[in-house]
Length: 193
Image (tube, rainbow, N blue to C red; front, side, top):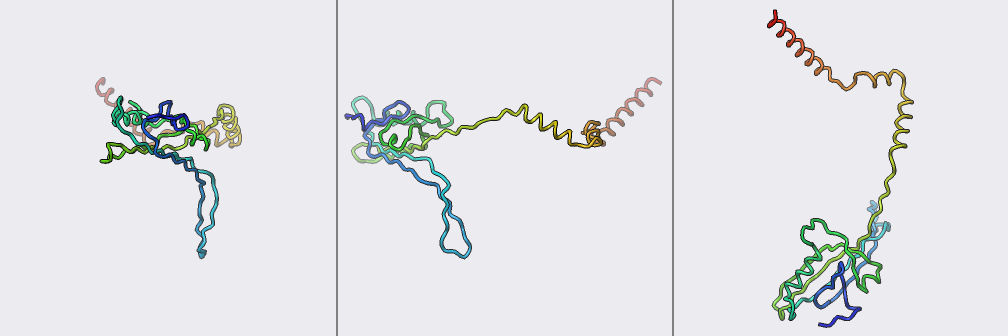
């Protein structure tokens, strides 16, 4: 089987084995519909875009060097490597994917269906566009300390004394501890006396 450069698809640096039957790239908008009482028409509100989806159909067959199941194992390793518990973003090299600006994908689904047709194995790959989310963290040290000190300064003197006194102790526990100490002292006095 001869591959031409523009028909070559690579996932994570590995050329997909088999004959590419089709590749479909889908991009769609995210639109919410609102329920309006008494109206048959639902107003629509555009709220963004969905991640693009890439579906690739392959036909695997036996070659001189590999069986179709060995070629399927190559796809399986790209889907989920040994010891991998969470899908990882992987680079994709494909003319169709790059036409949509897709460079990295998450391998969502791998399906094969055995048929009695010429010993071929149809395989479908479902890939979802991966767009990393950047999260910025703010340093909490100085801002939280200043807000805590300003909150404390706004409290009345009586309430600040209340907060500083032996708060947090349970009266029932204190009473139980005191009676236990009293019993021990009485017991010790009776033994000594």
